[in-house]
Image (tube, rainbow, N blue to C red):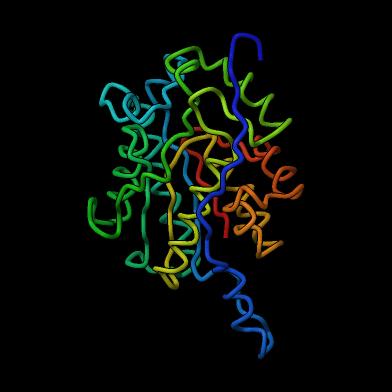
Length: 257
């Protein structure tokens, strides 16, 4: 990429401990086999934000948590409507609202989105049922892209398709983001049972998370592969490089499991 430095990640990531393989094996003695996941999962991209309105990339934690980069009035309304949609889905599925757990990125636009949804669902904000998770933050595109036009995303995505281990200088690769989202998923499965978990995050991270979750449903050892970059294989690369197939609109709610 002309004028940009890109770095390839080769270091090992934190292992997920074979959680899903253990879950699968634990029920193998008595058919039918138990569901791979212990909880139900929804994802929600934040509502329309001021960075969306201005057409700029705001991906650093320092900038993303500033109040001036929160939701627009339209985004607040979008978040409220997403909360209504989720409440309707939960009612149709017979899922009690007191089983809802909300985990959100600490960025202003995602925090404000989560607050609106929590209000609709009656989930107390800033309690164990609704807390920020640093692992759900925006993908950092590095200082070379920060606060520039969102049209620059196309440069990053072009590299993602070639090699998801490549990262913009000072920023995160697809695998970097996949690793931290895999850790969130593993932690949630260890901590909760029978919960309805809503993950409120950003466009790129949620695309990557969907790619991880889809492959995990088909290959229970995939989280281990994602979480250990030294042992990554062609499956991880081919899956993660196609994350743009899972794009979300602002405030789009999607059930995954």
